[in-house]
Length: 360
Image (tube, rainbow, N blue to C red; front, side):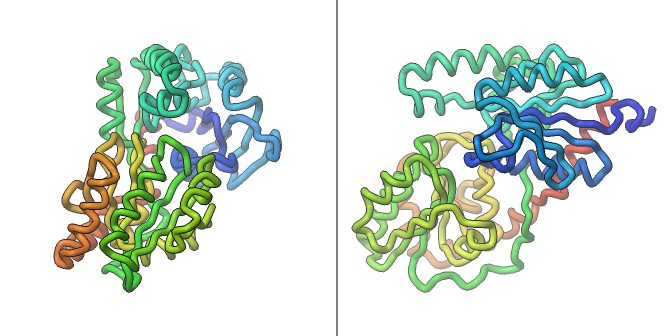
């Protein structure tokens, strides 16, 4: 049976945020790469999301038709109603980010989930977050019989525990090719944090680790790349540390220049879907020191491309240990580049397309 005839090569993506959303993250980057790949193969692609004040209700980007309505809560209802208007020739991709779009009764829908929120709820909301953690679990179980796509073994295992039985792992990719060898790094020890500046990412722990390192290595410096609700707080608190540079948001080329020159990337997140910044840093032979958390356990090969630690003190100790062993650092750096060669968005898109074809 012809795949084109069965599905009409039409895909509706339901995601609470779009690629232009001011708080977009790795999930939106992943979705955009998949959507672009589908358009290149001749698919008609629509992406339904919430509407921030500065964005249009409708626009087309890279051949993808964006429809925006509601805030980050109400868009789930609007998105579900929009999905109901689609006939069976459409494939509906329901992205679950703490809450889904309730398409579990629809036979032509599949689930895409990067990570469970779990600890996120209590980190952001305190004790009341336990209520939302419970609701997330109940809502997710409604999808347990759907074809499900996730990006890491960590989330795969979380879903298995909830009774899911049809899960495929399709990891993130890369827009850049890994180098053939480690580039020339800064002459002084240089650390970098890259990500949203919010509680669940623990950016202050990265800074605390740096301060401990600096007690022994006086000329060490650090870049903090990203924006978020903690930016002003961190800049004000650490204003006396002249060797900490808060860059704010950087475009890809500026970000890559810093990753290329840095010696370590620090990732103290409490949970990740995968850890996109890990692989981006690995491209340049930059090892990651991250918390032993879901997602990071998948993207960081402990002892091979970086290290998993439990707290910022252990993070600082590990940095110093590796820095003082040049042979160990060179081995890690070499392994990082080899590890990064396993990933590309072309591979990710092809795996995704193959999965959709299997639906016929």
